[in-house]
Length: 225
Image (cartoon, rainbow, N blue to C red; front, side, top):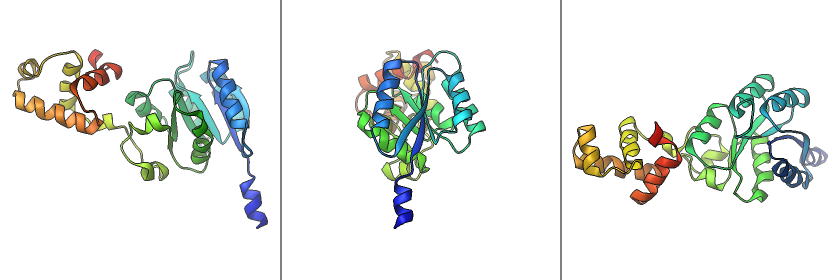
């Protein structure tokens, strides 16, 4: 019983990294307002994050994706080289597939979208600290897998990562506003085949109309590729 009580009272140390002071303050407040989580350091850029992670060896690092200086994904890689047992959670204002893919490749266990309910963050920190994955609601909509897969750390990519090269070609043209007949002519395939690719992409992305599909292509930067 005593061992159980001591385990329950174990404090999870957290390093918070974001270049916006207000967001850092909000995160610190949410995390410190619990009995088992404690922010031990803060940083405003990737370089300081690496230094502080090496110095304090936090259990969890919450790292903003968009910061000046050292790229956040490179910072995460450096932190994991120095402190391989540290769990990395990325924080971002945009829930793009590409950002989630980069986060997973960098070794992150979690991904939080800033517009999601902050009350879920403490639970997410606890999850990654015990070795599970955590994706806030908007990020979870983009990954391939279910809640059980997330808990078992089976998520290795987003829905967008399931798109084939040919489907990606079609998606780029859809994002640029081309009609199916034009796409068929440019790719040297039939309109029926274009329809098949569009339908497949929409199923993989759980998108239900062509306008939403075009917006996805624009948001993910495919039209510039």
